[in-house]
Image (cartoon, rainbow, N blue to C red; front, top):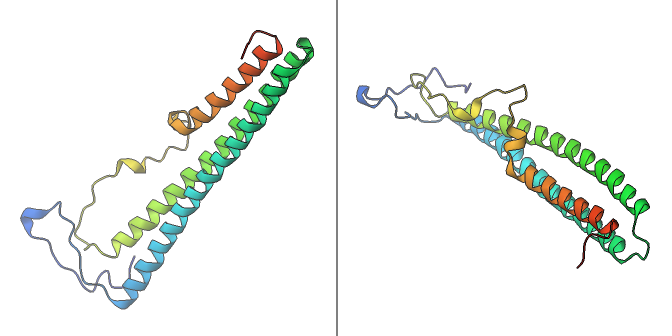
Length: 179
């Protein structure tokens, strides 16, 4: 809560209850507001940077799988050893990628929630005490499995591409694919 929360209140007109009523800021409120907004911006930037390197690492993984697929396709001895390598290695890669994406998702979600909390605290410095906020749908506190990891299209796309490349590798190792 800001320092002057109780000192300077301005009442909204009765007919405009849903309107946010702002009040003048004192210097200590401005400093608090700026600090809260910087923290919110930092958390949002950290989330964005994490998503950026997530995609870079996924592209590197796909490139590596593509090189392995090319080596499998060009081999003169297709068959069981290559198939076993693709099935075992592919299963390991998919499990590792699911674990890694899940951890990134949890950290991104945590940073996103914290950024919204800091933004809301900064907003409290601006709003008068008589304002009644509307419940925000982003605030659902799902600490149990709610399926949102699967609903995030980026994770599904990353896993699908990885699985497709591994499937092509298995097919190439069996000699069932022709380029």
